[in-house]
Length: 493
Image (tube, rainbow, N blue to C red; front, side, top):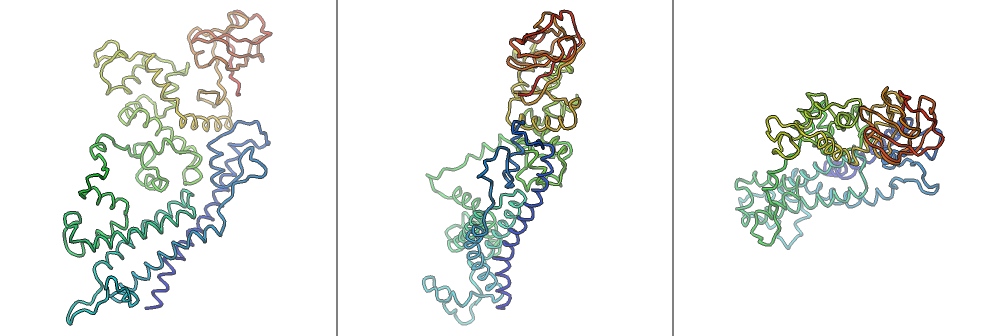
């Protein structure tokens, strides 16, 4: 029996957590190699310090202790030292080791360990009467049940932390505290069982042991539940009715994600479309087995779903709008400009809204949403840091594929915009006109370069702009009035 006790204690308290730390190191080195491969796309290879910074990629590099662009010579991200892991695991080894020794001693012998007979305060080992049951008391089995419940949960959390690469020494301390708290709550529940008959589910001892397992598996939830069921008038309770007004949209709604993928992403704390919409695509690519283009598409779909809702999402699918960038192109790209399509998009996005001034006529069944209102609303939805981050990644990939494949509009000076039309031409030496509209995608202060015509290669800053007219402040423009079929290119800052 001693051999079993020693082996089980070492396995639970030392070998298994130590193995998790070694697995973390293996995962770190593997993912660092993936990040170095990504640098070929998201980081210039010529050492140009003035290159455009991709924050999403820099966050990935910093998390995995790789140097970032413009890193100070004397400052490099450092991983935790071996001493930090050893010190942090001391309380975990002590608490888990003692509870494991206690649990297997009781389970193998059917009674309390002899060493606990010296606890005279609780008189746990008073000699039983002749013919009485000499098995371990109920509180011991409750503590064991809670220990195994909390240990299973914490080992699972530690494994998830490896997937997310947020396994730190402090996490082992937190696990030790949670396991000790779960066992303590279970003992308390059993010892005051008669007092808590209206709180703890009524039933046999087996029911109490099962409840103790739940208390160990979810100690914080159990404490909150006990407080809610108690008569503590001054305890601040949660308003349960609020939860009825909000629902989380499962990520299976995203095209390409099934239940198996959802379970895999749950290890990375992604359980709803909002979580996926706010995720870093490059981080997910490094930490999951899915392709970078696939993840970029999932995140773009999730951002559209988080913005317009699941009902509007399915309606927009019917007209080919799968992502928030498709919605942007339909509203703001001159090549996709179509009033009727904007009416359909408006009807899909605002179907649940009551008739308002944004609709003409006011009859909801035949309502046509004002084009300006729809465009303004889409502009508002696009002004989000998560959208800007995803756009920057798309732009960087597009530049590597080739400029002619770039299909996304630049916003906020992130990437170049190319506007080409046979109707685009000069009406004055410094004024350009596009009769069918579309110049509104440029902003005052943008720097443009002209391609084609006698002013090809020249450029200047935008001083005024409307949907049909644009004025530049550049010098040296030749008089090209009437010349058409030119190309405007917005230069990266």
